Amino acid sequence: NGKLRTDNSDVLKGYARDLVISCAERCGLQVELNDGNHPIKLSDAPMWEEAFITSSVSIIKPIEKILLPPTDKSNPLCCDGGSSMHVLWSSKNQSENNDNANDSLPKWKALYKEIIKATE
Figure (cartoon, helix red, strand yellow):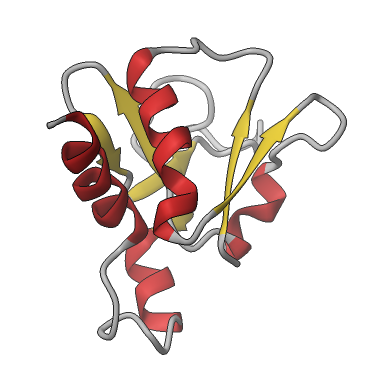
């Protein structure tokens, strides 16, 4: 939906994160810094177009999948290191649902290019 949402209270406010936030508007994204009143919820995952992390080494890295362990205590694989994981969100599913997927650059990649340009 054209928004970059990030928590602003319980995260490391690093250099790469600051670069992404400062370049986001130039890439057509509205920055929404969560103040704790509107938390980013896992139940909102179907609405996420992209997800990424920032780090000092990679600057910005796309997330392909978000996996969660099963929560059913009767399941023998639950909570004991079993390999049965639930896919909460997948970039593949999002690109299949996005009509403009082939028409535009992913936002994370546009942000990366803008960051490189801004730091040269």
